[in-house]
Amino acid sequence: QVQLKESGPGLVQPSQTLSLTCTVSGFSLTSNSVHWVRQPPGKGLEWVGAIWSGGSTDYNSALKSRLSISRDTSKSQVFLKMNSLQTEDTAIYFCTRPQTGNYFDYWGQGVMVTVSS
Amino acid sequence: NIVLTQSPATLSVTPGESVSLSCRASQSISTSIHWYQQKSNESPRLLIKYASQSISGIPSRFSGSGSGTDFTLSINRVESEDFSIYYCQQSYSSLFTFGSGTKLEIK
Image 1 (cartoon, rainbow over the protein chains, first blue to last red):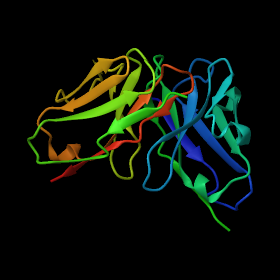
Image 2 (tube, helix red, strand yellow; image 1 turned 120 degrees about the vertical axis):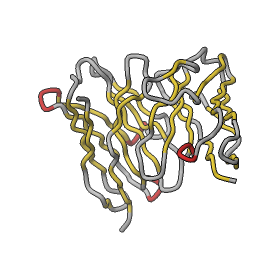
Image 3 (tube, each protein chain N blue to C red; image 1 turned 90 degrees about the vertical axis):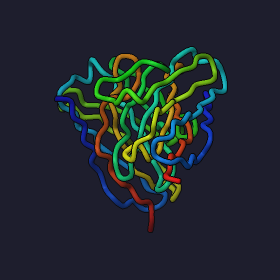
């Protein structure tokens, strides 16, 4: 069955770089896109970016200058890297897989990332 | 970027009432809107796709309508398990966006 699981450090210092991994199973990264969505504590959902089945990427305009999404298809892993972290980047980070129609039907459990010294 | 505005921010209702939640897009997006429910400490769950298409396993009391810029999620006779936060999401643009959410709470 389709599964996604996020992993990464729970605590990152301000100005440092965040690296997260989404490990997927039950589908191929060359057939489906994977997106990142984040949620600050007590706030709403924010679309972060995506890597499409062909390998191209799209990013939230507000984060584009700090963000990179890549993948390793042989390991079924998608990577998120965000630099120059600030406290406002503290959030739960989800990876999610959309159906062909670009609605999100499968979600990971999320990983909490706290930006603090 | 396409901005989605949800209203109201909070809706207080009594179980058994029927409700309508609004999502308005900053430009026409045809029917490329999807609705999610999120309970505390859980990942979002897809409720409705493409404005009005039902999802397998979702109770029939949930329905959606609208096109262009104005969309509505309706819940017929709210049940206790429905008290949570609801988000809309657009896929008209490849730069997806979510609305800010509507919290459905018990009056």
